[in-house]
Length: 252
Ligand SMILES: C[S@@+](CC[C@H](N)C(=O)[O-])C[C@H]1O[C@@H](n2cnc3c(N)ncnc32)[C@H](O)[C@@H]1O
Image (cartoon, rainbow, N blue to C red; front, top):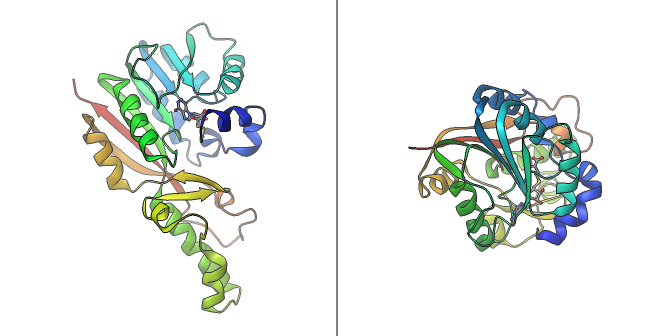
């Protein structure tokens, strides 16, 4: 998941990457932005991609800094914000260097960005992202859940058993056999073949507290089953698969 990977995706992003904002079953992300809205404050959209969330921030905050690794994705984001005069776009690699082209913000969104399988790069992302939260500011993260991935494995296995497979065959057809044991132990699992970091709830708490932020909320952001299975059966309902939705605060 380096720059080339994201640049290559720029023109087909919508077909390949699911939109957290659109798939958020309960509209929680939108509500969170509305609840923190303040025309005198600065927001940031870190790893904004094609800018699906950026216009919402621009509507509710005085100024918005949106940044991404990919120039191609930033072009789409700029086009989507053409009607707003309060958004500045920056091409930044948040996993490299230390200087940011914009100051820490009061309300920082970082949705499914700290997901690279590369541990060193991921640690640098945690460092840069958290440093961009101003004292007293709020950080909203969306992150893949390791627990949800294991739970999805169970639902797939259970589905095979209901369909009449023997236990051994159900296991054979259900489990993620891509990647090494070491990767799986670290929560690095395939999402459509791309090795992606998944987090335990407690892991997120530690990453934040090590960097001076307190997690006020870590809750499930549920999606429909079709994000996991192309044609989920009608009987497959709640509990749904989820990403972690994290709301953290940097003390003054
Ligand atoms: C899954 S997309 C999410 C986009 C957007 N946050 C959303 O939810 O619609 C991840 C985004 O993070 C960006 N990204 C990944 N690594 C990055 C880095 N090191 N610095 C800046 N952006 C990065 C990618 O270019 C991509 O646009």
